[in-house]
Image 1: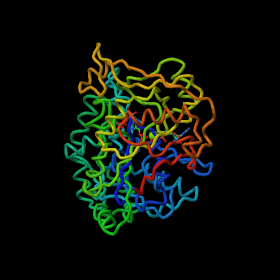
Image 2: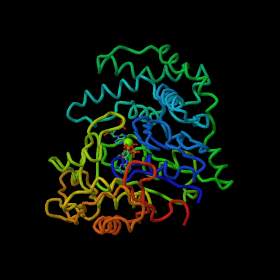
Image 3: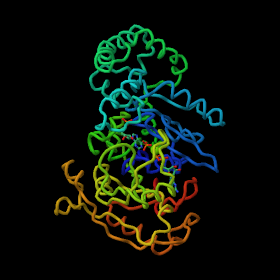
Image 4: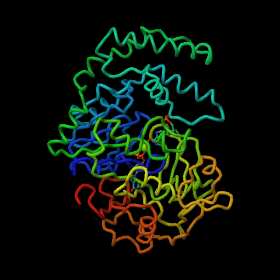
Length: 429
Ligand code: GDP
Ligand code: IMO
Ligand code: MG
């Protein structure tokens, strides 16, 4: 089973880091294919908590080769800080491989991300302010800087000059900021070149060769389906393809090599930043989920918006990604409710939608249609088999499995590496 894609089904923070870690030693490579340090993955191993942003979660597993694919945007300062922090905790990071074609996040794009958000006022997206949007925009308008440019001085300077010709006009004339000097940017980036050089490779070649030889490669998506720039709730999305298709463009591995698509889905829903969220809870239930589920951003510390499980979103994720298996996380957080609402459809001005409406306006105006499932009181965090779950928790899992369009193969009942119930293997048949 060589090519496995793992993505988020909702708005991010589903527990992708933990799911990747769970596959751990069964895979040879973990490749990050999109996004950058806007991601925040918490992985808990033996009581130790690791927060990863830019690095693939596979970096925590001995012998796995972690890869930053061409679809990722790399902030070099963050990369080296994160590597140093892991090294200081005894994690061997020497296996990391970085694509020569990945784009760099120059400091001016962090500045631009923040000033454009401020400029948007009440229309802002609520970005993480890490320069992600401006860097992907540069990639598309062909003024981006790539990892390989660091090793060709004249080219790096030429590209920075070209980019700043536009950026400085914007910064000075529109946003009233100071102009940025070419030398400043070139020096800042070149300072990392020697340390980066040994990690840089033709990752597409390496991954394809590894697959030829029967290696198992896990493609790890950042963000999630509803934050995908094409398939999410545009414009309230991130600027990359976080869905399964992004695994191919973001790594240079063809679709025929993907055997399995795993989507991680929370037993409820959360969202950080602006944008429509049909099952969002404003009152005490939302606060209760936030407190029990520790729903605060790993990257920005912002409280996450919380709501009930949204079937139209899960079905959409199953379809857009071609999901073969769901990993259902945080079922333990739902312990203690009398009734657990599940949104089975949207009501848009009297019309019932069982699938996600095509019009963004309809999504903004949709009201959730709930089915109320019976809750459970028993602590489920030590359950390790499906049969050990209380009957109502089993019924909840079966009900959302039936509705969501793919089997639920793993159930998370706690943050720790071992706090899972395996129903089907994620790698074997
Ligand atoms: P990611 O961005 O998708 O990797 O997810 P985050 O790490 O941002 O957020 C998921 C959070 O839920 C992390 O703090 C995990 O440790 C935690 N988590 C993952 N699975 C479970 C679970 O089954 N139960 C509980 N209680 N916590 C979980
Ligand atoms: P992980 O990988 C949750 C959200 C931001 C904002 C929007 C655009 O941990 O699931 P950006 O900085 O990417 O331009 O912000 O996307 N966002 C995330 N929300 N989890 C993430 O990553 C996110 N990455 C970006 O909050 O609404
Ligand atoms: Mg996260």
